[in-house]
Amino acid sequence: MIEETHPLSISRQARLLGLSRSSVYYRPVATAERDLALMAAINEIHTELPFYGIRRVRGELLARGFAIGRGHLASLMRRMAIAAIAPKRRTSKPAPGHKIYPCLLRGLEICEGGHVWSADVAYVPMARGFCYLTAIMDWASRRVLSWRLSNTLDAAFCVEALEEALERYDTPEIFNTDQGSQFTCEGFTSVLAGHGVAISMDGRGHWLDNVFIERLWRSVKHGEVYLKAYENLVEARRELAAYFDFYNCRRRHQELADRTPDEVHWSTLRTHAAA
Image (cartoon, rainbow, N blue to C red; front, top):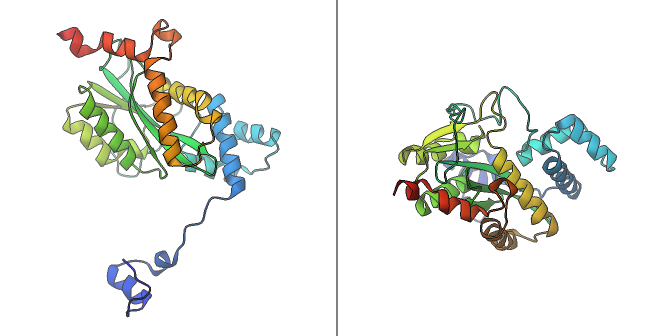
């Protein structure tokens, strides 16, 4: 919108558009190489030891030769959207004003595909930089229904993944997430409400509610991401598409009696059982 060659001065253009002049002059700064190395190490520690908080993660980093203060570590972990998995009063903090929904999974038996879906966001390191991965997963079968990558941590790519899953599959009864702002925003919850889906969010005493998708991230990172340093988002999308196809169709799970997510999903699907 701002044109440096326009007859009007840049400050005048900014005032007419209602923009701060400082935002016009701002130029994005790439993440420092040291911070990228730190974030990659933090990601590995969190994936291996997801119950470690800032103090223990810092201890692991110091043992690996990274000198870092608790404040800087906390800032990086917030930027990566990761936190220790442990009982706490609140999970990922929603944005101010966002509605929080109660957890609907207490005492619920979930053994049919299509009954409950869940979603989460994970940090994915690349050769030079990083991105965020979100996935929609069927709870009973562990099948990945849709996924998206983004280089920003906003709600848009989460909404896109949700809309694709709802378009391709029958609507679930319940959709469970944490209280992250990507999932509490109106753009995400309105899509679920519009399809008549009951919204569930992890709450106090329910820190394990999304444990299956946390295990998915562990499988994705150890079985795919850490083995390949993606050069860019294009390569990451291509390689992750192949991995999720393998995960759904060929990877057998002990907890699923050595069956694949595809086998469990289609054999237990609620609509098929009803028919």
